[in-house]
Amino acid sequence: MAVVLLSGCQLALPQSTLNPAGDVAQSQQDLFLFVFWIAVVIFIGVQGFLTIAVLKYRSRRGHESDVPPQTHGNTPLEIGWTIAPSLIVIAITIPTVAGIGATYDAPSQYADDPSLTIEVVGHQWWWEYRYLDENGDLDFITANELHIPVDTVINLKLSSNDVIHSFSVPRLAGSRDVVPGRVNRMWLNATETGVYAGQCKEFCGDSHALMRTVAFARESADYEAWAENERQPAVDRTAAMDAGWVVFQENACRGCHTIEGATEDEYELAIGVTGPNLSHFGSRVTIAANTLHKGPADMNMGAFFEDVPTDPDFMQRDPAAENLKRWLNNAPDVKPGTEMPDLDLTDQQLDDLVFFLESLK
Ligand code: HEC
Ligand SMILES: [Cu+2]
Image (tube, rainbow, N blue to C red; front, side, top):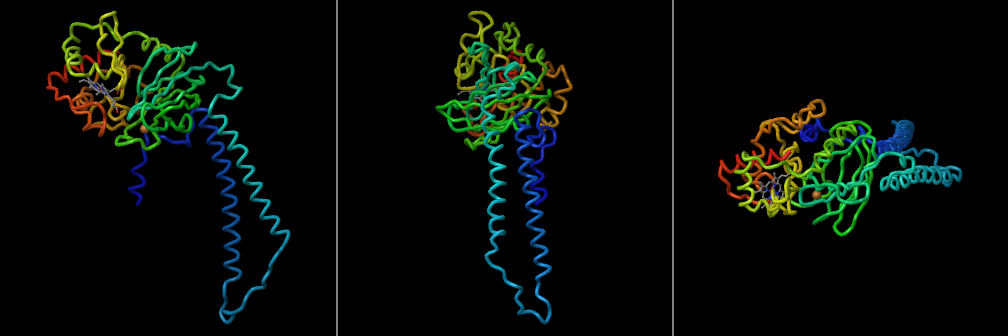
């Protein structure tokens, strides 16, 4: 039993609500502890009286058929145990309802904080992030890795491209359903820089368990540098990238993926929206919604993420191509049910593609 239970523990990137790193998660933690301690007091009270009753009124040798004094209809007691639970339920309901209400939009005390709005689109089985500028217009699009500045109100507008998903990064905020045909709202902020894991929390098909995400909360200046890079088109194509670009163009990749052109005619053929936007795929550290990472193939996800926050050159690290090749070689084998097909590419084509994709920083 212990082995089965403990296999759920992931120490490097815990999705723990008990270790909040954002104000929304903190308020949920406070509410949880409030209810928890009330429950502890009730538990001790009930079990205490039960224990006393069991000991005091147990049957004794020679008195097996004795019945203790019977009481019935004690009015003060009846009133007491009707009113006390009602008061407890009211005491729990008020902060709960207020707390739920405060998860949609940032409360007024955050009015002076900087803010950022991101549209989150759930797809089977990955997350699209569409960053908006201060006028509410589309700024740039990325996927699976959410970058946010610390101490900033992040307004999320959640919608789905297919089925019902649920967005959740527990250390920053709770979860919210992502429903086709409507836009749900939630807000969050990160009070410490760090890397926070998340995943879809609503069963959404074959690879639901592989619909993960990761949030990088960084100092404003670091975030801005990242965002500025995202706003740029994909890097200019160099001669070394040509072989990979040819494979990309000739194998339906461009029908499903977008690469923003560096010059007018550069990547104009890649405008697909079925799969993630790959314009800056080379600067991402995970593949296919955290299903694989770009470290050595034999390293587990936890070990891979352990040094991310302390290694400033992480994004520039040489790609270890094994995992990316595995994905490009046969995506459905890695992620059952994915729309990305096995395109029967040769080893040379895979190498060319890896080089090309990793050049898109
Ligand atoms: C029929 C549509 C389709 C085709 C064709 C296709 N892909 Fe994909 N691709 C997807 C989808 C959908 C995903 C997201 C899979 C997931 O994470 O569940 C994806 C994911 C990826 C990713 C990971 C992106 C990320 O953000 O982690 C890469 C890289 C990629 N595809 C490259 C390619 C290349 C190169 C080709 C051509 C050899 C190709 N794709 C062909 C649909 C397609
Ligand atoms: Cu999902």
